Amino acid sequence: MKRKGLMFGFALVLAGLALFQSFRIDRQLSVSAAGRPELKVESPVPAFTLKGLDGGEYKVGGVRDKPLMVNFWASWCGPCREEAPALKQVYDRYKGQFDLYAVNVTRGDELEAVRRFVKQAEFSFPVLLDTSGEAAEAYRLLFVPTSFLIDRQGRLKEVIHVLPPDELEDKIKKLIAI
Image 1: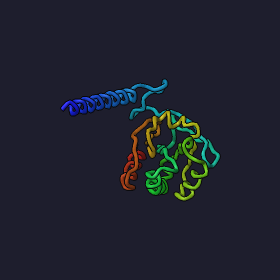
Image 2: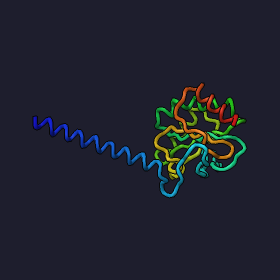
Image 3: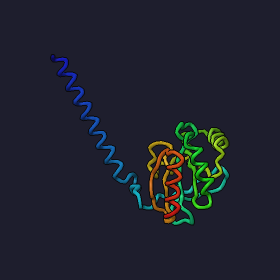
Image 4: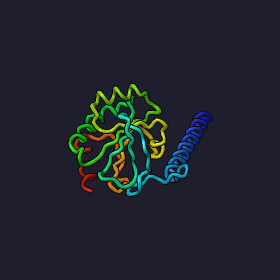
């Protein structure tokens, strides 16, 4: 009987710690981190400039000619591999109407693996290299793949993860129409 009471007490303490930790994480996500404003829908996205695999420099943030999808990914990520054909398909279909930047989280990846992934996936859109992790940090990236849909005014419209091709296409059509 005493042992059951101890086990119950231990389980209660663990549950309390889990609840406390969950509250702390939720609170941390809503408070600005390192002076960066919280990412909110309809708010301007953090600006960054990264080099692409093609050697060019690409800028995110501020007013642009076309809406933008920023997709954070890694070559070792299974869901990123699953998502790649849908990204290629939607870009090939709407490439004149929106931009797509595939931001490789290079800090946790190998450049040769990145090149192989891009070649195999036949990406025709810019692949950017976040070698320092600053862009991922500014966007508070928790896992890959994560995509940010950004309107022409540089405002966040939506955050999405792997979607079936038809749902991804619907999101892109809505982004273009804004």
